[in-house]
Every structure is written in structure tokens, then in C-alpha cells.
Length: 150
Image (cartoon, rainbow, N blue to C red; front, top):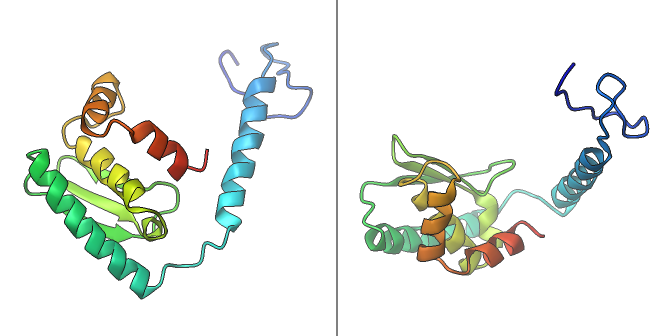
């Protein structure tokens, strides 16, 4: 069992490899607690008024940023997503935004719009992606931290 990851609580040691997995287990517990907390904080479905306001904001932001970044022909929609703020399919040039964005500030929504539009140029989160994000929205790291509650 070389290279396996143990998520057991038996002192943080895996008997087959003898490696110490205490730090991984601590991270799993901390991350799980944070996710469960976020899910429990009144995550009722967004109202029609909230969705309408988000649709209006996304229409404006997508129009502004697609023009600014020379990315025509982008199709987008709003859905209730479980674990991400947005999703980009770069081949079909379609973006899905999480309805929960309706409960966040314009700056945070703008960050998600720029992030997803950047995926049309770079489909992964490699160095080139982060370089483009730095160029396009210099304060993106702060906005991401705030949006994710970190």
C-alpha cells in the first residue's frame, strides 16, 4: 500500500506505510467543520427577487468584462451549485454561476465573473491563469479569501 492516504484516527499513523498522516487528518477535520458550518448558516434557497437582482448584475458585468477581455459569444446561466461559485466550459464557451452569489457584494460577483472568463483563455489553474488574474483584477486574492470565508 505504498502512497495511500489514511484518514483513520489511530494516532495519525498508517500501519502499512508507517508514515505520519496527522497533518492531513487535521486538515480534513478542519475543512469538514468549515464546510458544515457554511452549509448550516441559513442556506435557504434564494428568492426570486434575489435571483432577478443577480441576473441584472451578471448581465452588466458579463457585458462589461466580455468586451474588455475580447471574449465574445459567451453564454451564461444561473443555477444552485453545491460547492463552487462558478463553472466554465471553455469548449462550448458557457459559464454557470451559483445562485448564492445573489447574497454577496458586487465586488465578489465581479471576481467570479473575471475568474470564469479567464478560464476561456486558460482552462486550468496554472501559472498562466494566475498571471492573467493578476493583470485583470489585481485584488482578486483578497476577494477570493473573503468570498470563501477564510
